[in-house]
Image (cartoon, rainbow, N blue to C red; front, side):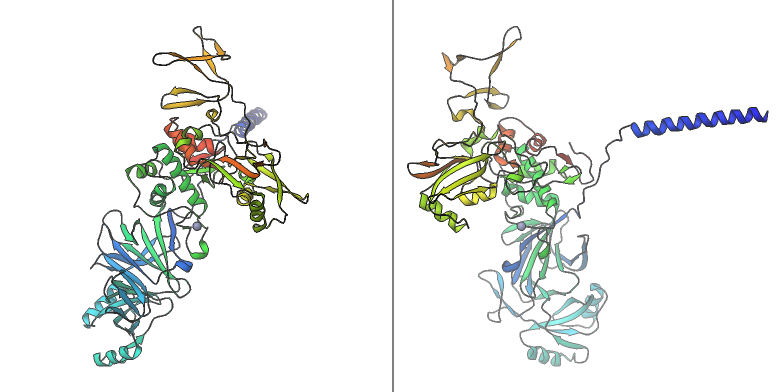
Length: 591
Ligand SMILES: [Zn+2]
């Protein structure tokens, strides 16, 4: 019995073990479902530098556009607004360096100095006992009947202050006259102090002095805040600090999608096709996310110029550009779960370029692609086809100025092109027989002053992706416009066989049969020079298409893909960025 039971148990165990082994093997062999990995974004709030460095301002006005009043506080390390105080008696305020300043009514700006009718003095009577909250300090000031009081946040406490004077002596006299001696002292602030006044007056509303946190001002609004600042309307809130103890560094704290709404009309245009705008919105959002530490030395993420992305708030935004942002809200371009650096360029002239051939480092999704779309809208692209000419002396002087040591240039040739036909290596020879090369897209553009790297020299032009550039052009009517046919043309016969068209091709026009001029487009892209020395009539001639660095998405290509070819924003993105995904911040696929 025992023996039998033991055997049974042993056999059962063996079965269990073998079943467990099979399950383990199956689990090991089964493909795991892809797991979404959240993108490493510090916050959904972007810090955009508006004025900083040598452009910092002594004073800055704000005007609440949709609400009334302001909250004062600071942004914590998670970029969340922490409220300290508020102002509910006006919609126009000005932040000033806490030095003597006067109001220049002609320019509606405060300027350093004590002249003029309205002067904000930097000397104040400050009461000794700091309070732990703004409300406590206000109550103290009111219960004691302090004239012209305001609250100053300093050292983490709230102090009642009174008046503003241009000299310490004037403040001392006022303090003596008011009988505050012993409880208060005259204080002139520090190199970090910022005064907030009611615009156009010398009425101080609030003062802020902290070495730990920076003054933030958030417009009060029942809905989405929108505030005028220097002629532009911005979403979000503002931060002010005196970076080196001088003028104000001004930073807009804005939600990512609101930031993109302020970029789109300036980086693309507010009348472009919706799908192109959506592609641009995803690119702009992704570019921002990839560059959140670009200007960290100034305390913000991105500047508002084309050094980063042009951003002027909402003035030029419209329903269409907002729709493009809303319909792609929160979407980023990723590669292997990481945010991409999504470069874009105005016009690629027929092919984009791998980043390694332009800036020298390889990025797997920034691979050059031949662009059959852009040329279809070439007539709308300003300066799409270009010619740059130099006399030998002009070119020599230009190269010398850029650090190339050479005598008068005798010949220029493109000696290597990239797989997509862009110029990769230019070989020059001077009159003394010195031979040298210029490589990499950025250096080539700079050395020769050409708008793009898609060019030929000495009378040749590159293929711009449009067979219309020669006599070999055929267009067919697609659902959404004409489509250029490149390469061999095929027709479907009545019995369904597909025949290559050779010989004459005819089409019916309204009242006639016309022959269509056609031959297969066999051009292979830029490169060889018809003239061996790169000259035409004694001048070096560079002829090409497009403008920009040729890396990433062509904006005009996106325009054509959307407008002429009916492509969607994700098709545009996948065309220009090789092997990418479009995902949300939590890593899940968006489309
Ligand atoms: Zn920048």
